[in-house]
Structure formats: structure tokens, C-alpha cells
Image 1 (tube, rainbow, N blue to C red):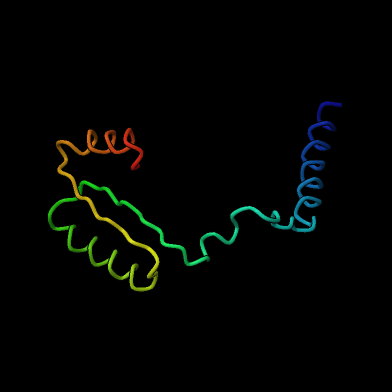
Image 2 (cartoon, one colour):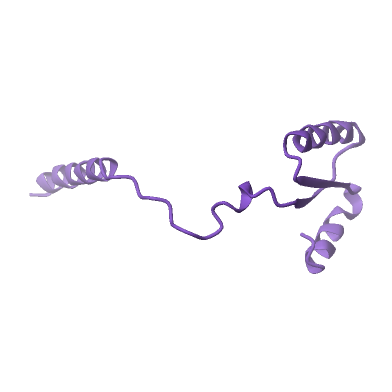
Length: 98
């Protein structure tokens, strides 16, 4: 009886997965903020990091390239020293900027 049970349970799991995979896709919810990102409204982002000096120009180039293809997005790059990065992030969160 136990070996039969061990055979039936995996079979039922496989059948359940097949039915789940064959189900019709769920439609996206109506309304909400679905189109907010495409509205063209200005977006401001603060990018805080603690990179080494060699990484700063790379980050700035990536941000500039991104902003060229997304003109409504403004990214402020803030590179803090390792020594006070955590405190700076916590202060920003407390002030509602993070």
C-alpha cells in the first residue's frame, strides 16, 4: 500500500502541474498606475553609492547614456566615502529621500 501511495502522489503532482501550465493567462488588472511610467511625467532618482574613485566616471557615463534615452528622468549621482555611507543612507531614509 505504501509503495502504491508513493507512486500516486507524484503522478497527481505532475497532473496538477500540467493543468496549471495549460491554464489561460490572467489578464492584467484594469486601472491603477499601469500607464504612469509611460506618461512622460518627470521622474527624479537619487543614486547613492560608495564606489572607488575609478568607478565614478563609469557610473557617470552610464547615467548620462540612460538620461539621453529617457529625457524625462533626472538622476542625481551621490558617491559617499565608505566611512560614512551607511550613516548617509540612514539619514536620507529618515528625511524621506531614500
